[in-house]
Length: 147
Image 1 (cartoon, rainbow, N blue to C red):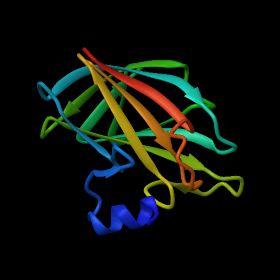
Image 2: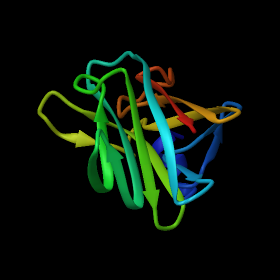
Image 3: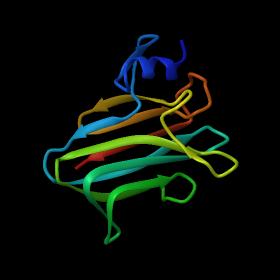
Image 4: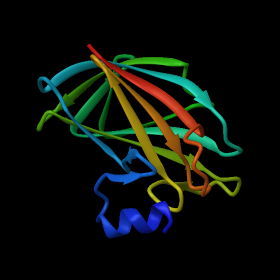
């Protein structure tokens, strides 16, 4: 059974695959409605452009600018480290990976897409698979430090 089939069966909930817990999205409960985070791109290994999607019921403050509800950080245009504030009405941050194929289409959540997440104190490290159906989880590796 493919990763996509397993996620369909689980209705998008985390799955265990070959001893690894995999997720389509990460739903992070924040310590308050306003939290500082630092996002760092650690590695990419894909023919496609890789992105990080951050979403909340509320807004983000990045470089003094306000962005409502959702922000996408692309590895080919964003700095390697980005500091920002999450101002969430429900104190929840949703995180997932996205990718852009050669024809310009932006995709997420299908085919081989999945994330393996490791937590070390206030830092989460995301090892991501994009839509190319392999199991290497190195298409995008990034971390989020919660401050």
